Length: 382
Image (cartoon, rainbow, N blue to C red; front, side, top):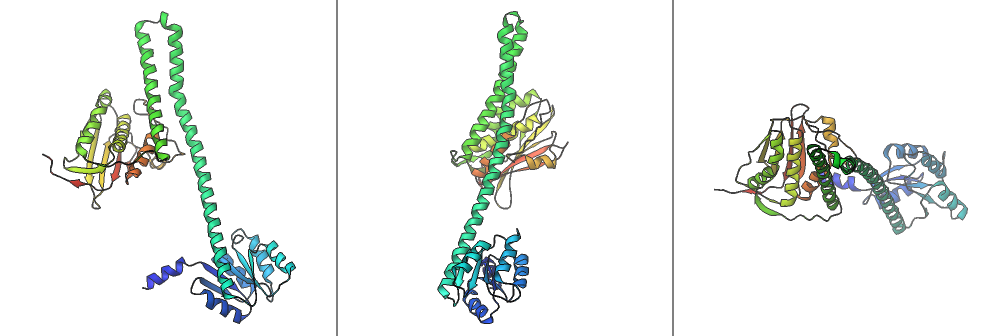
């Protein structure tokens, strides 16, 4: 019960009341206490100190006070970047427009004329707190948009850089082939054609990942779950990449139990696993081993991991792997290119399935990439 009351208090807006008349403080305090957290003081110097240390959501400030007036308090608070945005409502018995205008010029958001009307006080305070909350939200959203735009600008510059490599290869090699084909021995011509094909493959994979990632971002990729046996699906993905692994004499082992099923989007899952396996092959040394395993944790979540014995990744670079505005330029063990876009796609697809992606790695000791998906069920498979 006490915790509930404490939470309710924390959820309430915090208002500072400044008035040198005890009866006014008592009246306003009694009216506002059921709805807001309150601090009260009877002089301007204390008000400035409280405002700077506690940063209230709103200040009710009497104009006419001894030692220092409400106008001076307002002026002082508006000079300080920490307190300048706190809404200040003046409490005054003055009706002259000149006094009211002076308060607005100093930065006040409103006036409440004495003697107080209870309903008016509540409505004015509520209105300005809502305005302040809306303004804060708009500022926050604006900052988020600025950050996203900055990240995307950097991301697209990275993509442009990655496209330039294979495109330059295509243009340069095809130009040589066009100009020199009649003079070239067949073996050299075939080497050039093989290099052109390799550049085209790199470009195609990059564009495929980019297209799929962009479709995820704008919500065109829908999650369509199907209940499947994971061992079978993983075997299919391993078979697709066996030829690539064989070129480096790498063996891939599937240790996934045959009785684990999961409700997954097959296309999304395949994309994640193929990216994991492709990276594992790329960063494994010749004659290395790659292990695919699937476990289920105490929360019922299914963890599908791809472990290699390759180069590993530093802690600093692990933190950059899933950031749109960061780039980890790291070629494979035999110079294979890497864009990093595939891992961004893996993270987003895993989140679409209600899951996540995790990385455990250490330089020189290999890496384990895991996709964690909501729990499925186990069945006997004969």
